[in-house]
Amino acid sequence: MGGDGDPEVFVADEQTDIPVDLERWQELAAEVLRSEGVRGLAELALLFVSETEMSELNELHMGKPGPTDVLAFPIDASEAEIVLHGQPISRGPDRAPADPGDMPLLLGDVVICPAVAQRQAPSHAGSFDDEMALLVVHGVLHVLGHDHDDDDQTRAMRAREVELLSEHHWHGAAPETFRQGHDE
Image (cartoon, rainbow, N blue to C red):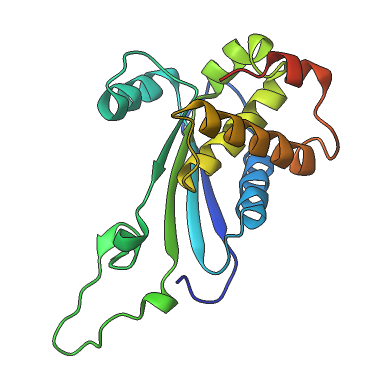
């Protein structure tokens, strides 16, 4: 599935509250995809939105009021086989059936609110930079099927987050401030 090629991360900054280094977070998301074994043509969207937009998404999709830090919207692989860039593939009478091996695997969307990240960083990851990195990694892992519905899943997901952040963000061990403040 996905054909030949490398995973791609598309980024968009749809907010103006806090400057976001799109290239940096795009590269981190791509590194996480590669570390998690994503190969071939695969696409992920990484979006940065305002608190107002995040509040609307949180209410609509999670049924919760107010903004949150990150939301992940995975796309089911079975849907990716018949949908290309969000549109059904046309198979008119003069067209051969599409070859799923030639289409990109649409992984999903990760939506982050930098304003919420900035506000919660001191009590969560320690710094705004570490908080943003954590949210990118956390969101990508959710899109790839990781979750934290119970204690075992939470421990496994947190451990994987620290491994990925150590490898791709800190390029070494997690700083003490992150280990002390990191709480789901």
